[in-house]
Image (cartoon, rainbow, N blue to C red):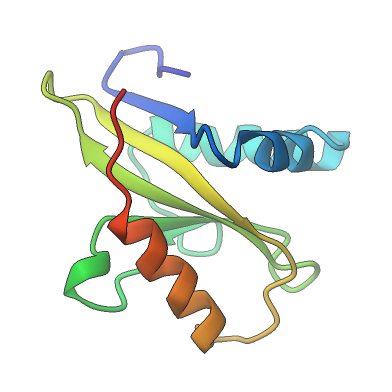
Length: 123
């Protein structure tokens, strides 16, 4: 899904698309939050409580997280950001992590973030 100005686009990982789409479109609350996070990304903003880098080490600089219902369910969709050959910022929603339990990143989250960092995508 590209932004109106064509400078940014959001995609979903083909291997995890069913799980991610089922989560995003499970109810109006999820749809509304997802739309709001997309608007943040398309606007070129980072709001740490909703969308921010997961810069835990040098290998993971391009990993971000969409944060759903922080302080409640605290779900995450970990994403990989990169620039296309034409200069478009691509955000690929890679892995859904429901019900994050710790305030910081536990070993489980670190493993997921490092996994996402290792992915290479073709668009």
